[in-house]
Image (cartoon, rainbow, N blue to C red):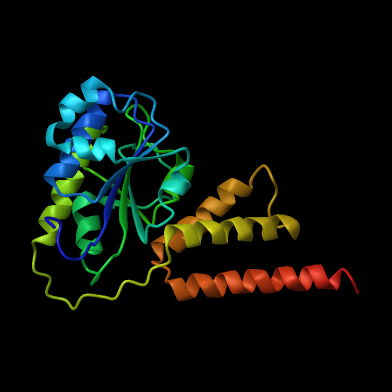
Length: 249
């Protein structure tokens, strides 16, 4: 595999693409870099159109075999590590973004990632803040501040090139065993945390999303392990059990 032995499966995920030419170009890139699978969330164009197929060239197999989902959470259900691309400069100040080069160097510091997903947003407005929080890490591709947003297929090409370039480097440090909590584990945990904090009155409905977003950003920045997120979920479950049983007494 051109992207190196660290990945057994690489998924490129497009969210609501509205240009068939872009979709075809991305399919071609998947072939260029031997990506495992192209996934598309709620496409806003005919991804199987003649335009798309002409642009795909040898990547047409990625169009034929691409998996289409109606929800981003479903598209990353089996992914151990999820990265999201963001070109916006008006994101929440609590968000943490790193360059594409740095994020892929970090990704390659692990011995093996079984399923890696890279998410790319809409051509006109990218990914929402809620969608960005579904990723373990978010990266941007440095461009002019006057015009920071790249064409979708161009962004995909740069990201795959950077990942491929990083995989060719010789890392001096000993590679770490991958044990980060998955995006799904973190997301499910915070649904339970939000429900609990609403129940005990710490959160209010109209402000809960903003406060939970800050807490979730902290967890994502901390590179939380699977064991640590399970401890957190265990605490939440125990508090819920106590609250439910204390009402009976």
